[in-house]
Amino acid sequence: MSTPHPADEGRLVHLGIGNFARAHTLVATQRAGSWSVVAFTGRTAAMADSLNAQGGRYGLIVRGAERDEVSIVDVIDEVHPADDVDALVRLIADPFTAVVTLTITEKGYAAGNDPATSVPARLALGLAARREAGVTEPIALVSCDNLTGNGDVLREAVLAAADEDTRAWFAAHVDVISTMVDRITPSADDGAGALVTERTGLVDTVPVVTEPFTEWIIEDSFRGRRPEWEKARVQFTDDLEQHELRKLRLLNGAHTLMAYAGQVAGLERVDEAIGHREVRALVEQLWSEARSTLPLPTADLDAYTAALEERFRNPRLADNLIRIAADGSVKLPVRALPVIAELGGPDRAPGEVAAVAAWTAWVTDRVRAGEEVKDPRADDIAAASGITDPLERVTALLALLGVAAGDPLIAAVAAAEQRLPRP
Image (cartoon, rainbow, N blue to C red):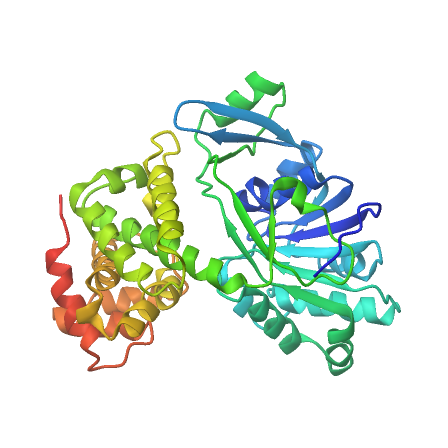
């Protein structure tokens, strides 16, 4: 079991300072108290400019079904653009830095070994500098992305980019921590900044909107200093896998299904999708299948899906389906395909098959309408979606998910496409 050091302050470096981190991990770090935070942006440097202009402060709008709660988060000391590798290396080499948290999305872990474009490669450089500086206190790398075993994924990516001496030094000096995170964070609406100013006086160009629900479960394997996240109701556990699977297959799985099936049905928001009779029926079928693969008490699963439905129905959150629909070629192989396999094939998992079929139908509709599909395989998706023969098209699209030609899932998905609700 890890032992936090309440009397110790430290520095936390965060990589990928987007909306989710600012609504979730950094809020918990502020509530923990006493820690300094330096952040680095993700895809663009614009967030660094905006936050630095505001002294690192921003408004947090917690949007309940009936009212908003507005507060100021002021835990950030400074923000650097992602490509300021020198600053990151300097910070990691500093003994005062004890924790690095990451929200870099699934794609960020497979970015290669070039520090100019790869977060794992930048971390490897920073750890090499820490080793060369003779720092002995452990540093913790904490992944907060929606990846099963995200700490293992991070460890492999960093070690693959590290030099031989740093790899040998790594185990004795670096803790890599898996976590499970959960808080829906849609894009801020046009009136969010004005609301922050009205309630707090802060002129805010980068407010964050989120839901009342928040959950952060962290693997309990820190050897060095860390924030007292317990003060923010963060849970520490020795068995993260069950929590990960519950979230991945029930929350993320339902989100993925609604993102595609909802848009195919002509809907735009999550609350509209869960309120649509046919889409809701698909979600309930998916939940039934996914629940049967989870080794958790029925009462716990009932409570969890009831909480999910309440969250999805929040009419004031207005979470857009198009936001959730990004990167389907990365998400489906971990959210839907394992359940289909565990249940014995597509005939035993029609709800999961519907999620895959909703994706193939949605990307096809988008491509043929000349609209963008945000996905690391976007070019391949566009080529496959242009195939005229329906079965050949589905075969080509599922190949991008790792499904072999001739797999029974192909015919099942092609048939399920025809049963999806349409406007």
